[in-house]
Length: 262
Image (cartoon, rainbow, N blue to C red; front, side):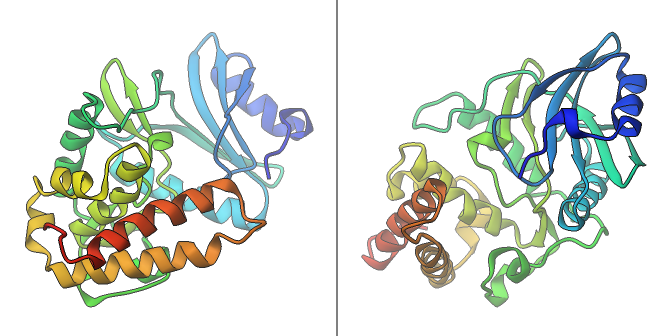
């Protein structure tokens, strides 16, 4: 649940204002891992601020801070500063200006994502206590284990096309896994962006990690992921859960037909 900026303790708002030189606030429209998520603008420029107060929110944000500091680079926003005051943890990230990525078939943004996936597939997981595949996804397979940094949530909402290239935001669910796991999770977002399951697999087949994993492993992953989201998509569940149940279900059905390509 997001918190209104006006309810923050003065110790927090003053510290932010001192660092940015002012406080013109534009709350983020999406996301729920932190009680505060907003663009803060002042004479010193812009930062994207996340702040948390609840036990869960602080744990999640502290995890994201550690991961972001470890992987800060060309594809992830840099951590500008962080502090704790009045029971709140606040983190100022590099602000990323630009539209969300378009992952529909034929979009040039797919090339940007492809470059990022190539780099991430070679990125060793930092030693910051990342999620395990089972801890993140709720199911397991021996082939999911690995030493690669996996973002696990490369939907359009976390992909910003800036003048300097693609930036991947929100590392709160980063995981240590085999590199193909990132690609398998990405199928749901490609299907949600207009790809058929076959088109999604054809696009992913450019990556060695996808071609090297066995069809039976992908079958197992697709079936378990679809079952998970189908169980979550109850009548009173939010719309995005039903979307994920639909998209993961499409991929699982495609794998079950026996005409899938690896």
